[in-house]
Length: 354
Image (cartoon, rainbow, N blue to C red; front, side, top):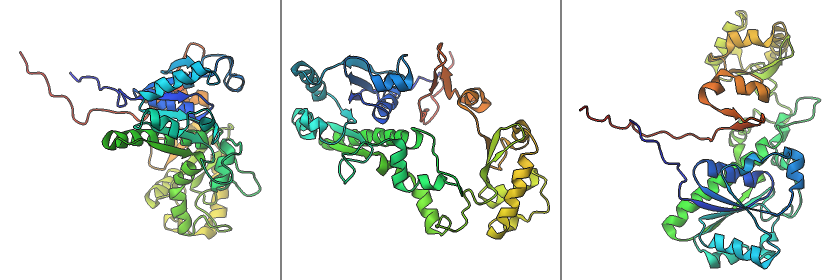
Protein backbone atom coordinates (compact mmCIF):
# COMPACT_ATOMS: atom_id res chain seq x y z
CA UNK A 1 0.00 0.00 0.00
CA UNK A 2 1.30 3.45 -0.92
CA UNK A 3 1.79 5.83 1.99
CA UNK A 4 0.34 9.28 1.26
CA UNK A 5 3.02 11.83 0.49
CA UNK A 6 3.55 14.61 3.01
CA UNK A 7 2.87 18.06 1.51
CA UNK A 8 6.08 19.34 -0.08
CA UNK A 9 6.11 22.61 1.91
CA UNK A 10 5.13 21.12 5.26
CA UNK A 11 7.11 22.81 8.03
CA UNK A 12 7.40 26.12 6.15
CA UNK A 13 5.92 29.11 8.01
CA UNK A 14 5.02 32.30 6.14
CA UNK A 15 3.67 35.57 7.44
CA UNK A 16 1.48 37.28 4.85
CA UNK A 17 0.54 40.94 5.13
CA UNK A 18 -2.72 40.63 3.25
CA UNK A 19 -3.10 42.81 0.20
CA UNK A 20 -5.06 42.49 -3.00
CA UNK A 21 -4.50 40.02 -5.82
CA UNK A 22 -1.14 38.40 -6.47
CA UNK A 23 0.33 38.45 -2.94
CA UNK A 24 -2.60 36.55 -1.38
CA UNK A 25 -2.71 34.24 -4.43
CA UNK A 26 0.95 33.33 -3.88
CA UNK A 27 0.18 32.69 -0.22
CA UNK A 28 -2.74 30.46 -1.13
CA UNK A 29 -0.59 28.36 -3.48
CA UNK A 30 2.05 27.95 -0.79
CA UNK A 31 -0.63 26.94 1.71
CA UNK A 32 -2.10 24.44 -0.74
CA UNK A 33 1.28 22.72 -0.82
CA UNK A 34 1.52 22.44 2.95
CA UNK A 35 3.03 25.72 4.18
CA UNK A 36 1.60 27.32 7.31
CA UNK A 37 0.51 30.76 6.11
CA UNK A 38 -0.49 33.30 8.74
CA UNK A 39 -2.39 36.10 7.05
CA UNK A 40 -2.40 39.38 8.96
CA UNK A 41 -5.51 41.24 7.82
CA UNK A 42 -6.70 44.76 8.45
CA UNK A 43 -9.59 44.90 10.93
CA UNK A 44 -12.92 45.86 9.39
CA UNK A 45 -14.47 45.35 5.94
CA UNK A 46 -12.30 45.03 2.82
CA UNK A 47 -14.20 47.35 0.49
CA UNK A 48 -12.37 46.61 -2.77
CA UNK A 49 -12.20 42.85 -2.17
CA UNK A 50 -15.92 42.75 -1.32
CA UNK A 51 -16.78 44.69 -4.45
CA UNK A 52 -14.81 42.34 -6.70
CA UNK A 53 -15.50 39.01 -5.04
CA UNK A 54 -18.75 39.52 -3.18
CA UNK A 55 -19.47 39.17 0.50
CA UNK A 56 -18.73 35.43 0.77
CA UNK A 57 -15.47 34.00 2.11
CA UNK A 58 -12.44 34.80 -0.01
CA UNK A 59 -10.91 31.76 -1.71
CA UNK A 60 -7.54 33.52 -1.42
CA UNK A 61 -7.75 32.95 2.35
CA UNK A 62 -8.33 29.23 1.94
CA UNK A 63 -5.99 27.11 4.05
CA UNK A 64 -4.52 30.10 5.89
CA UNK A 65 -4.61 31.16 9.53
CA UNK A 66 -6.30 34.56 9.64
CA UNK A 67 -5.36 37.13 12.27
CA UNK A 68 -6.81 40.66 12.33
CA UNK A 69 -3.91 42.98 13.15
CA UNK A 70 -3.87 46.77 13.21
CA UNK A 71 -0.34 47.73 12.23
CA UNK A 72 -1.02 51.34 13.25
CA UNK A 73 -1.03 50.33 16.92
CA UNK A 74 1.95 49.30 19.07
CA UNK A 75 0.19 46.03 19.89
CA UNK A 76 -0.32 45.20 16.22
CA UNK A 77 3.30 45.94 15.35
CA UNK A 78 4.50 43.86 18.29
CA UNK A 79 2.39 40.90 17.15
CA UNK A 80 3.73 41.16 13.61
CA UNK A 81 7.32 41.27 14.86
CA UNK A 82 6.78 38.24 17.09
CA UNK A 83 5.52 36.20 14.13
CA UNK A 84 8.30 37.39 11.82
CA UNK A 85 10.96 36.39 14.35
CA UNK A 86 10.15 32.70 13.93
CA UNK A 87 8.92 32.63 10.31
CA UNK A 88 10.72 31.29 7.26
CA UNK A 89 9.33 33.92 4.91
CA UNK A 90 7.16 37.01 4.63
CA UNK A 91 4.85 38.29 1.88
CA UNK A 92 3.93 41.93 1.44
CA UNK A 93 2.44 43.79 -1.51
CA UNK A 94 2.63 47.46 -0.57
CA UNK A 95 4.16 50.26 -2.58
CA UNK A 96 7.89 50.72 -2.01
CA UNK A 97 8.64 52.41 1.31
CA UNK A 98 5.40 51.54 3.14
CA UNK A 99 6.83 48.65 5.15
CA UNK A 100 9.96 50.66 5.97
CA UNK A 101 7.82 53.48 7.39
CA UNK A 102 6.04 50.93 9.58
CA UNK A 103 9.36 49.71 10.92
CA UNK A 104 8.89 46.37 9.17
CA UNK A 105 11.24 46.79 6.21
CA UNK A 106 13.91 44.23 5.28
CA UNK A 107 16.57 45.76 7.54
CA UNK A 108 14.18 45.84 10.51
CA UNK A 109 13.17 42.22 9.94
CA UNK A 110 16.78 41.08 9.45
CA UNK A 111 17.48 42.21 12.99
CA UNK A 112 14.65 39.96 14.18
CA UNK A 113 15.36 37.00 11.91
CA UNK A 114 18.50 36.95 9.73
CA UNK A 115 17.27 33.82 7.89
CA UNK A 116 14.02 35.45 6.77
CA UNK A 117 13.10 35.45 3.08
CA UNK A 118 11.33 38.76 2.47
CA UNK A 119 8.90 38.48 -0.45
CA UNK A 120 7.87 41.76 -2.06
CA UNK A 121 4.99 41.61 -4.56
CA UNK A 122 4.55 44.71 -6.71
CA UNK A 123 3.60 45.58 -10.25
CA UNK A 124 6.59 47.68 -11.24
CA UNK A 125 9.25 46.49 -8.78
CA UNK A 126 11.13 48.13 -5.94
CA UNK A 127 13.08 50.49 -8.20
CA UNK A 128 12.71 52.37 -11.46
CA UNK A 129 10.75 55.50 -12.43
CA UNK A 130 7.37 53.74 -12.17
CA UNK A 131 8.03 52.02 -8.82
CA UNK A 132 5.79 54.35 -6.79
CA UNK A 133 2.95 54.56 -9.35
CA UNK A 134 -0.35 52.70 -9.11
CA UNK A 135 -1.13 50.08 -11.71
CA UNK A 136 -3.01 46.88 -12.45
CA UNK A 137 -2.63 43.65 -14.42
CA UNK A 138 -3.34 45.13 -17.86
CA UNK A 139 -0.87 47.99 -17.35
CA UNK A 140 1.99 45.70 -16.41
CA UNK A 141 1.44 43.37 -19.36
CA UNK A 142 1.18 46.33 -21.73
CA UNK A 143 4.59 47.64 -20.70
CA UNK A 144 6.36 44.33 -21.40
CA UNK A 145 5.49 44.37 -25.10
CA UNK A 146 3.55 41.12 -24.81
CA UNK A 147 0.04 42.57 -24.74
CA UNK A 148 0.66 44.05 -28.16
CA UNK A 149 1.01 40.52 -29.53
CA UNK A 150 -2.69 39.95 -28.82
CA UNK A 151 -3.74 42.72 -31.22
CA UNK A 152 -5.30 41.78 -34.54
CA UNK A 153 -5.36 44.22 -37.46
CA UNK A 154 -7.86 46.95 -36.73
CA UNK A 155 -8.63 45.65 -33.23
CA UNK A 156 -7.46 46.57 -29.75
CA UNK A 157 -5.35 44.01 -27.84
CA UNK A 158 -7.03 42.21 -24.95
CA UNK A 159 -5.79 39.73 -22.35
CA UNK A 160 -7.73 37.67 -19.77
CA UNK A 161 -8.09 39.94 -16.69
CA UNK A 162 -5.88 39.15 -13.66
CA UNK A 163 -4.48 36.00 -15.31
CA UNK A 164 -1.27 36.77 -17.14
CA UNK A 165 -0.02 39.59 -14.93
CA UNK A 166 -1.33 39.03 -11.42
CA UNK A 167 -1.19 35.23 -11.52
CA UNK A 168 2.22 35.14 -13.19
CA UNK A 169 3.54 37.56 -10.60
CA UNK A 170 2.13 35.38 -7.82
CA UNK A 171 3.79 32.32 -9.29
CA UNK A 172 7.08 34.18 -9.56
CA UNK A 173 6.83 35.23 -5.92
CA UNK A 174 5.99 31.69 -4.78
CA UNK A 175 9.00 30.35 -6.68
CA UNK A 176 11.23 33.09 -5.29
CA UNK A 177 10.19 32.41 -1.71
CA UNK A 178 10.70 28.67 -2.06
CA UNK A 179 14.11 29.13 -3.69
CA UNK A 180 15.06 31.74 -1.10
CA UNK A 181 14.16 29.43 1.79
CA UNK A 182 16.28 26.64 0.28
CA UNK A 183 19.22 29.03 0.06
CA UNK A 184 18.66 30.34 3.61
CA UNK A 185 18.65 26.82 5.00
CA UNK A 186 22.00 26.21 3.32
CA UNK A 187 23.70 29.54 4.00
CA UNK A 188 21.88 30.86 7.08
CA UNK A 189 21.28 34.12 5.22
CA UNK A 190 17.87 35.46 4.25
CA UNK A 191 17.25 37.64 1.23
CA UNK A 192 14.71 39.94 -0.39
CA UNK A 193 12.60 38.60 -3.27
CA UNK A 194 11.71 41.52 -5.56
CA UNK A 195 8.83 39.93 -7.49
CA UNK A 196 7.78 42.63 -9.98
CA UNK A 197 4.93 41.59 -12.24
CA UNK A 198 6.56 43.35 -15.18
CA UNK A 199 9.76 41.35 -14.64
CA UNK A 200 8.00 38.00 -14.36
CA UNK A 201 5.74 38.59 -17.39
CA UNK A 202 8.70 39.78 -19.44
CA UNK A 203 10.52 36.57 -18.52
CA UNK A 204 7.51 34.53 -19.63
CA UNK A 205 8.08 36.00 -23.08
CA UNK A 206 11.24 33.95 -23.58
CA UNK A 207 9.79 31.89 -26.43
CA UNK A 208 8.33 35.02 -28.01
CA UNK A 209 11.71 36.76 -27.87
CA UNK A 210 13.34 33.73 -29.49
CA UNK A 211 10.75 33.65 -32.30
CA UNK A 212 11.11 37.41 -32.74
CA UNK A 213 14.84 36.90 -33.14
CA UNK A 214 14.04 34.62 -36.07
CA UNK A 215 12.09 37.41 -37.74
CA UNK A 216 8.65 35.87 -37.31
CA UNK A 217 7.10 38.48 -35.01
CA UNK A 218 8.72 41.52 -36.56
CA UNK A 219 6.61 44.64 -37.04
CA UNK A 220 4.80 44.50 -40.37
CA UNK A 221 5.87 40.94 -41.19
CA UNK A 222 3.37 38.05 -41.31
CA UNK A 223 3.45 36.02 -38.11
CA UNK A 224 2.53 32.37 -37.52
CA UNK A 225 0.47 33.72 -34.63
CA UNK A 226 -2.81 35.25 -35.91
CA UNK A 227 -1.67 35.69 -39.53
CA UNK A 228 -1.31 32.00 -40.35
CA UNK A 229 -4.34 29.77 -40.90
CA UNK A 230 -3.00 27.03 -38.64
CA UNK A 231 -2.62 29.01 -35.37
CA UNK A 232 -5.82 30.89 -34.66
CA UNK A 233 -9.33 30.84 -33.21
CA UNK A 234 -12.33 30.21 -35.46
CA UNK A 235 -16.04 30.88 -35.02
CA UNK A 236 -18.44 27.98 -35.52
CA UNK A 237 -21.98 27.83 -36.89
CA UNK A 238 -23.57 27.87 -33.43
CA UNK A 239 -21.53 30.79 -32.10
CA UNK A 240 -18.96 28.56 -30.41
CA UNK A 241 -15.25 29.07 -30.97
CA UNK A 242 -12.42 26.57 -31.48
CA UNK A 243 -8.64 26.97 -31.53
CA UNK A 244 -5.91 25.48 -33.70
CA UNK A 245 -2.18 25.42 -32.93
CA UNK A 246 -0.72 23.14 -35.61
CA UNK A 247 2.69 24.82 -35.82
CA UNK A 248 4.70 21.64 -36.51
CA UNK A 249 4.59 20.15 -40.05
CA UNK A 250 3.33 16.68 -38.97
CA UNK A 251 0.49 18.24 -36.99
CA UNK A 252 -0.39 20.56 -39.88
CA UNK A 253 -0.44 17.67 -42.33
CA UNK A 254 -2.81 15.75 -40.04
CA UNK A 255 -5.03 18.82 -39.72
CA UNK A 256 -5.36 19.14 -43.49
CA UNK A 257 -6.19 15.45 -43.74
CA UNK A 258 -8.84 15.63 -41.00
CA UNK A 259 -10.43 18.67 -42.63
CA UNK A 260 -10.51 16.96 -46.04
CA UNK A 261 -8.25 19.56 -47.63
CA UNK A 262 -6.33 17.14 -49.83
CA UNK A 263 -5.64 19.83 -52.42
CA UNK A 264 -3.55 21.91 -49.96
CA UNK A 265 0.17 21.11 -50.01
CA UNK A 266 1.36 20.57 -46.42
CA UNK A 267 4.94 21.27 -47.52
CA UNK A 268 3.91 24.88 -48.26
CA UNK A 269 2.84 25.47 -44.64
CA UNK A 270 5.15 28.47 -44.17
CA UNK A 271 4.64 30.03 -47.59
CA UNK A 272 3.15 33.26 -46.25
CA UNK A 273 1.75 34.21 -49.65
CA UNK A 274 -0.80 31.39 -49.31
CA UNK A 275 -1.95 32.33 -45.81
CA UNK A 276 -4.69 34.92 -46.53
CA UNK A 277 -6.63 32.73 -48.96
CA UNK A 278 -6.23 29.61 -46.84
CA UNK A 279 -7.28 31.44 -43.68
CA UNK A 280 -10.44 32.59 -45.45
CA UNK A 281 -11.07 28.99 -46.42
CA UNK A 282 -10.57 27.78 -42.86
CA UNK A 283 -12.87 30.53 -41.59
CA UNK A 284 -15.69 29.48 -43.92
CA UNK A 285 -15.19 25.80 -43.17
CA UNK A 286 -15.36 26.13 -39.39
CA UNK A 287 -18.36 28.45 -39.71
CA UNK A 288 -20.23 25.73 -41.58
CA UNK A 289 -20.63 23.40 -38.59
CA UNK A 290 -21.37 23.75 -34.85
CA UNK A 291 -18.57 23.50 -32.29
CA UNK A 292 -19.58 19.97 -31.26
CA UNK A 293 -18.92 18.75 -34.79
CA UNK A 294 -15.35 20.00 -34.72
CA UNK A 295 -14.77 18.65 -31.21
CA UNK A 296 -15.90 15.19 -32.37
CA UNK A 297 -13.61 15.37 -35.40
CA UNK A 298 -10.48 16.97 -33.94
CA UNK A 299 -10.35 16.86 -30.14
CA UNK A 300 -7.82 14.40 -28.73
CA UNK A 301 -5.85 14.18 -31.99
CA UNK A 302 -2.44 15.63 -32.78
CA UNK A 303 -3.83 18.57 -34.75
CA UNK A 304 -3.42 20.74 -31.61
CA UNK A 305 -7.07 21.58 -31.06
CA UNK A 306 -9.27 22.76 -28.20
CA UNK A 307 -12.66 24.43 -27.94
CA UNK A 308 -12.88 27.83 -26.23
CA UNK A 309 -14.83 27.07 -23.06
CA UNK A 310 -16.56 29.35 -20.62
CA UNK A 311 -15.77 28.95 -16.93
CA UNK A 312 -18.94 26.93 -16.37
CA UNK A 313 -18.26 24.68 -19.35
CA UNK A 314 -14.68 24.06 -18.27
CA UNK A 315 -15.87 22.39 -15.04
CA UNK A 316 -17.76 19.77 -17.03
CA UNK A 317 -15.11 18.97 -19.64
CA UNK A 318 -14.10 15.27 -19.43
CA UNK A 319 -10.38 16.06 -19.18
CA UNK A 320 -10.87 18.35 -16.17
CA UNK A 321 -13.36 15.91 -14.67
CA UNK A 322 -10.86 13.05 -14.94
CA UNK A 323 -8.07 15.06 -13.33
CA UNK A 324 -10.25 16.74 -10.70
CA UNK A 325 -9.03 20.14 -11.89
CA UNK A 326 -12.01 22.11 -10.59
CA UNK A 327 -14.44 21.91 -7.70
CA UNK A 328 -17.58 23.87 -6.91
CA UNK A 329 -18.82 24.55 -3.40
CA UNK A 330 -22.41 24.64 -2.17
CA UNK A 331 -22.68 28.31 -3.08
CA UNK A 332 -21.51 27.65 -6.64
CA UNK A 333 -18.05 29.15 -6.27
CA UNK A 334 -15.42 27.59 -8.53
CA UNK A 335 -12.01 26.57 -7.20
CA UNK A 336 -9.02 24.99 -8.92
CA UNK A 337 -7.02 22.15 -7.41
CA UNK A 338 -3.46 22.73 -6.22
CA UNK A 339 -0.84 22.63 -8.97
CA UNK A 340 1.65 21.29 -9.74
CA UNK A 341 0.89 17.80 -8.49
CA UNK A 342 3.31 15.44 -6.80
CA UNK A 343 3.63 11.66 -6.86
CA UNK A 344 6.18 9.19 -5.48
CA UNK A 345 9.36 8.87 -7.51
CA UNK A 346 9.05 5.09 -7.29
CA UNK A 347 6.10 2.93 -6.26
CA UNK A 348 6.14 1.70 -2.70
CA UNK A 349 7.41 -1.86 -2.23
CA UNK A 350 4.66 -4.43 -1.90
CA UNK A 351 4.10 -5.85 1.56
CA UNK A 352 5.31 -9.46 1.83
CA UNK A 353 2.50 -11.97 1.75
CA UNK A 354 1.73 -13.76 5.02
